[in-house]
Amino acid sequence: MNDPEICTLSLHNQFKMSEPDDPVQSIAEVSDESEYSSQEDSSKEDSSEERRGIAWVPPKLAAVDMAYTIRDLMPFDDHRRNDKMIIDSVTTLRGSWPSPDEILNNVDLATCILLLVMRSVAPNIPLKAQWRSWDHLHAVAKQEILRKSLANAVRCKVFIRMRSLGLWYEGY
Image 1 (cartoon, rainbow, N blue to C red):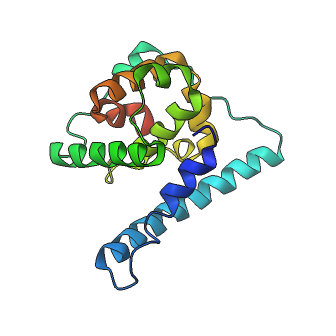
Image 2 (cartoon, helix red, strand yellow):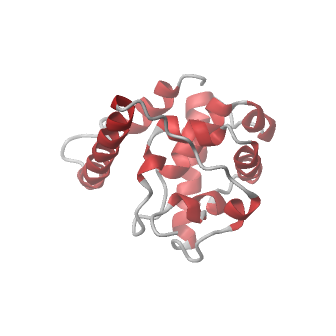
């Protein structure tokens, strides 16, 4: 699970396995197309930064960042469904659910779970472009304060707080 490609390939290909006539796939493809076009825009920004030799520096997170959440981000049932998707995906990919200590000690694993959280954010509030990048999520996951919060979410198998952090969204 140390290879980020394992996680991202599995996430991006999850809709390709259903039949072409499957209405669920059509809806998923439509929503993913708009997301991918945003990701392409983000990739263009990232590549222009790379061309200019500018390295992206993650924000230094503080306790206030980990406490500032958006109330009523989405209905509780949506949170629970998204939490189940994260748990099922990780358990399927790894064969078991990680321990909080694994999250604290393994930045790659923490990033993979954080990527799944980013895939389940509120659809009605735009996600900041920097959080669509594996590299940017990996850079911020190196901070112990984030891994501690994520480890608590993993312990409880509830990601409502992580998903609701204002730092992920435009305008917050």
